[in-house]
Amino acid sequence: MVLFLIASMPLLFSLVTLLPWKGRQSPRPLALVSTFLKGVLLFFPGYLALLIVRGIFGFSYDGFLLFLSLLQRDHLFPLLAAVGGFLLIQKTLTIPPGEESVFLVVFANVSGFLSMLNVADALRTVGTWDAYVLFILPALRLGAALIIALAAQRFYRWEGRDGAMFCAAAAVCAVGLTVSSYLSRVSLVGWGAALCAAVVVGSVAVFAGRFPRTVQG
View 1 (cartoon, rainbow, N blue to C red):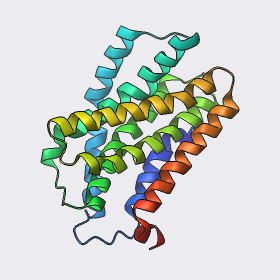
View 2 (view 1 turned 120 degrees about the horizontal axis):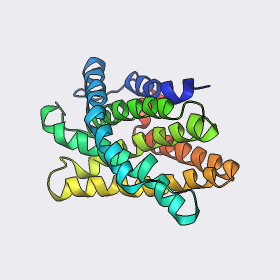
View 3 (view 1 turned 90 degrees about the vertical axis):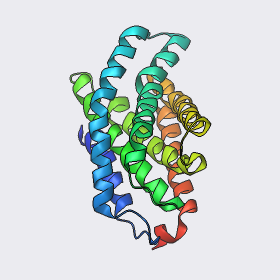
View 4 (view 1 turned 90 degrees about the horizontal axis):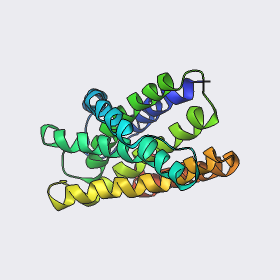
């Protein structure tokens, strides 16, 4: 049952990497694997920061405070940590100009971070696994990885105001994802799952529309 939680993000990364990208300057698969592993390494200091933030803000199980708790724990700070980690190392990465290259590099790095976050969530919730933890949350993160990578080109090269706007875009994404999480936690699992499916299908559709030749390839 825990397989989707642990394996979904690496699997999506593998599928996207192995698509027939046509750009001459698109990063090679091995370079993307290296970028993915850098995202994995960024997770460890990032998760320490997340634990500190969670200790400060705590968690509530009622009303709007539940929404805010799910926002900060499951989406906002994790996505900001992933994007922030990428911004810290992006100058050390080889990012050829072009929409395909920017998407692939950002997607690889963020996917590495979120893959480890899913593993951490699997360990953190042992004994209390449910549909939200095992399926809805990891599916939302699949959509988040695609959305953030698709938005990255708009803010390339992510310096100064553009870097701040990139983080703001991740924050807006987090707020939207939290609606599905909130519905799932207030006994409206069906609605939460439906909204989650809409997020994933929508992000895949935008991806296919942005790179039609690759998808059809």
